[in-house]
Image 1: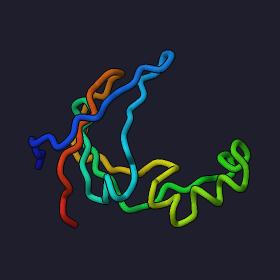
Image 2: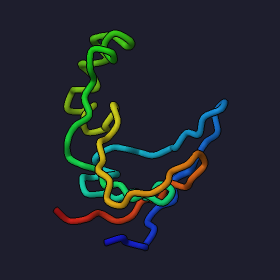
Image 3: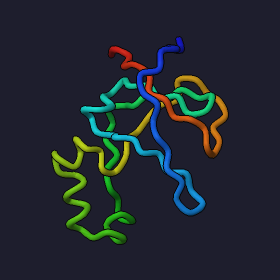
Length: 105
């Protein structure tokens, strides 16, 4: 069931040839169950942590990997967030990102 009430419009910044979304991914801002609308699609943030891997460690170093996987780094979701598709749809460069309410567990 799609919710239509928009809680927040997320600002976008244009850098070089990429669209950058300025969105606080921390657990306090986007708890598990939070829904985002990207283009025509609806995604729901999941509780599963996104942790660093060997590629991350090789690029940024073991200290960075330890920090992003520390309790503070995980709460801030410094490695990003995982989400599941609630409603499929087209997503394109420049599409708005909107935050909907939180779906109770």
